[in-house]
Amino acid sequence: MANFMMHFGDIPPIYWAEAVNCANYIQNHTPHRALEHLTLEEDWSNTKPDVSFFR
Image (cartoon, rainbow, N blue to C red; front, side, top):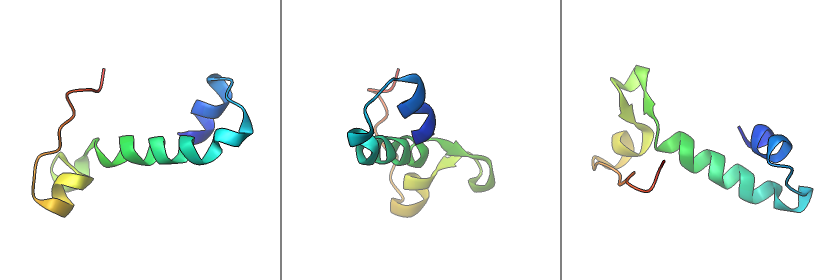
């Protein structure tokens, strides 16, 4: 996902770490089939994450 953001967003390589952090954040807040459609964060913390700012 970070590669996709860097390539198609035409982002300079200096922002590689930020792209990885952003991709990780998105992945942790996305429902997962193996967890019965819970997010990874929800499974870890037992609280529903706030995703109201995602578009």
